[in-house]
Length: 278
Image (cartoon, rainbow, N blue to C red; front, side, top):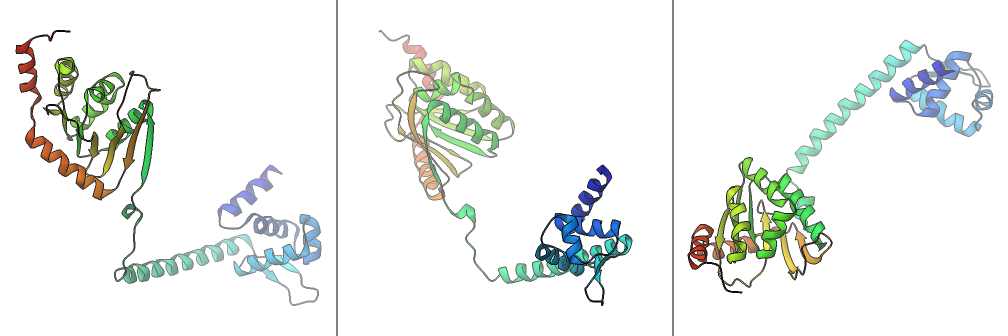
């Protein structure tokens, strides 16, 4: 029985349906039969057997007799498999021709591809924000532009986003960032500089907080109020792959970049001023 099952499985792998494989194997093993007896042996209905036999005849694996009632016999295995194989080869050649025809016709058509549609998603926790950021950084190839508050620098340092940023830079990517660097942010800013990010300071920045990955994927803050640095802390950020929005954010970033100063210069100024009074 194990050999029977294996044989039927191999027939299915050759392109037969399960019912076709069972019927052909039964006829091959037990000899020609009329549909009524075959249906009884396979424990199914005559109508079902007739459909199955029609499929096997079309594949060249079963021949009907000219007598009445009609008796169906399995074609010799080697011949049946060769016939089925040739049929598959013929179908493949025909599909290749249809493929070429469709490719030629498609040159004169304009189809809207999936990447022409923009998608949006709301990110609701720091955990989701960090996970999403790391995932995008892992697949990014060219660059990341970001404008972040002090909280963003700390979150990136605490929860591993900086490691993924470092890997992007090591792959040849570029990261440029802008933040409002005060005395408390010296160490987080230095950490970014150490991994190769280009960081600048924009004094008293109160505008939109965002990141743009490879000129397409955007993360922008709707609500940046963070009361504690916990992965479960609630936030509200927008994720989108809208190219128009990406172009807007990139233009905004370049304007801010021109108006900002290097983070190293800002850090030197803060160190000269000394620790502020509390």
